[in-house]
Amino acid sequence: MRKLPSEPSSVTVIKDSANRYFLSFVVERQPETLPKTDNSVGIDLGIKTFATFSNGTKIDAPKPLKKRIKKLRKLSKSLSNKTKGSKRYEKARARVAKFHGKLKDTRTDFLHKLSTKIIRENQTVVLEDLNVSGMVKNRKLSRAISDLGWRQFRTFLEGKAEKYGRDLRVISRWEATTQKCSCCGFRGGKLDLQVREWECLNCGAKHDRDENAAINILVAGGQSETLNGRGGKHKTSASGSSSLC
Ligand SMILES: [Zn+2]
Image (cartoon, rainbow, N blue to C red):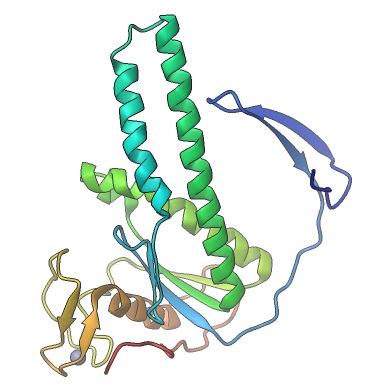
């Protein structure tokens, strides 16, 4: 068992839909600080690749998540075949709930580790303000997005930026981050989702679609207001990128 950092001022027992019990403690703790760094990063969130950084790093969503979704579908189907209120139905319902709990744990763990790493390594973090509810109109997309937890990811980043004194900036989704060449600023046409790599018609630079977007996000973040009012308006630059200009 883990030791609490101080005497708790309250304890709450929580039961989730999978009949699991959790104890929640409220404790006072001193704010932690991280050493300042000059690093800044722009992050492009995607479906195939969960996150692409402006330095070219790509982060995939955890594989078990994909595998488990298949099993979850099977369990849900088995539930829908049973008579509501029957013992078998209750058993199947509990199994589905337990699975949802496991999926949630895997996703939360992944998002916590990734957000901690990003905040630890960067002074300034720039994200695009994704209109998740607008995308939810596309059912296929919406399922993938809610499984990935973009919203939760941003919430984690916000909390950790606040806690460690980092600067989290969110740029408007109307910035043309995908179409704009990060080398010369030329704006090409709209890119089909299937197009993963493209060449700028103006300067000839070759781009990885997501990395180019992440660089544009980082640069746009350098001109935007800070979200938590910290860090000032220092310029961000896209250094360490593998994009060829
Ligand atoms: Zn160009």
